[in-house]
Length: 157
Image (cartoon, rainbow, N blue to C red; front, side, top):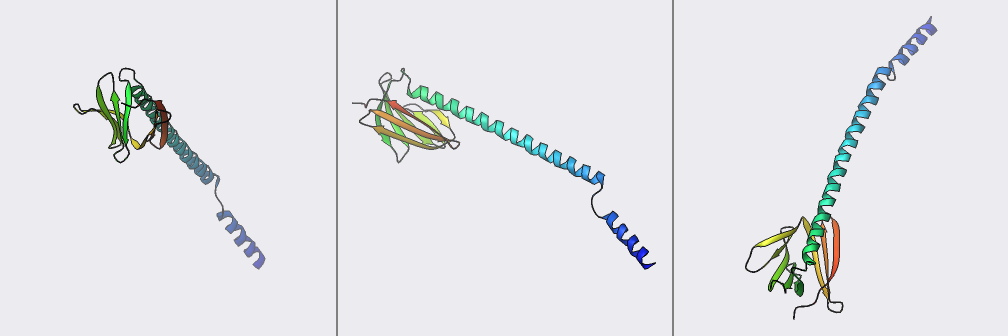
C-alpha cells in the first residue's frame, strides 16, 4: 500500500511541471510580435538614416556648386583656422566673401550684406591652402560623415 501511494504522488508532481501547449503557443506569439516590432523600428531608423545621408549629400553638392561657380570666380585670400573662416575674393562681383562655421552651419557672407547658409549640421570644418599646387582643400563633417574636396584656386594678388 505504501508503494501505491508513492507512485500516485510522483505522477501527480509530474503533471504540474512544464508548460502546457496553450502557454507555449502564447509565448511563441508574444516573441513573434516583439520581433516584428523591433524589425519595424529598425526599418524606420534605416529609412531616416538614408534620408539624412541623401540630404547631407545634396547640401554638399550645392555647396560645391557655389564654390566652383563661374559667376563668382573665387580667388583665395586667406584662412583663419582660429575662427574657422575662409576668406575668398570674387573677381566677378569685385567683393570679399567669408565662409565660416557658425552654430553648426557654414555660411557665406559679405561685409555689406547678411549671410547665406550653405551647409547645416556641420560638426567640423577644415580649410587648407597649398601654395605649391595653388589649391584649397575643404573638409567638412556632417552627421558624422566626412566630405572633402580640393579646388584649384589662384591666390588674390
